[in-house]
Image (cartoon, rainbow, N blue to C red; front, side, top):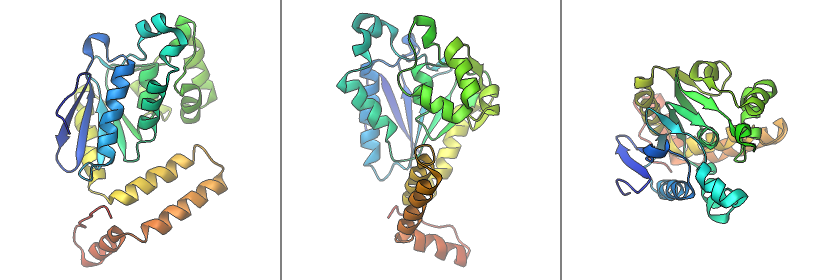
Length: 260
């Protein structure tokens, strides 16, 4: 995997962790079509790389991402967000099968928050700024916030955020279940990488199946979701990692998972 690209920087971290950094600092990591396509390309490569077991996505201390590229939308109108290349990139990110953690510092606005919500875990700075401000420029969220944000934080707070455009900080995001942890800003990336290393040590197939089953809880009935879980655990019992994990437990040693 390349060390960097134009708007996305990547770096390998020990124990199967890939750090992906949005690298458009002058524009506060605004989500241009090109940036999203480059991110999708990185995730496609990571998806097929057995050495990558968990991905951490971050920005910089000023911004995870300030959202969609307003200049693109002003020039192109609705087509700026409703074109095949952008929708394909977003679909690739949304359906990335391996665990993904968002390490959020600074601004996480509009499409930036919608992108963060595609991660499986969000670790945030206490002073991070989460907002869906689209209404202040005469539009509404268009990359999933009306659905995902509502499912995560509930109707009332989602309505407040979307209808007013007013932000919440990392502490309030934690209280309302939007993020898993809220920490001092200088600890966020380190903590996200530590969690990623822990996940990367677990059985990769089981991690993929667990992610699939948990996501089903947001899209199906309880009965259908339980069936997804049953199918997933049935498959987990067919893997070499299941045999290794249980043998290691009985033998009182650390398991050596191979991802098969």
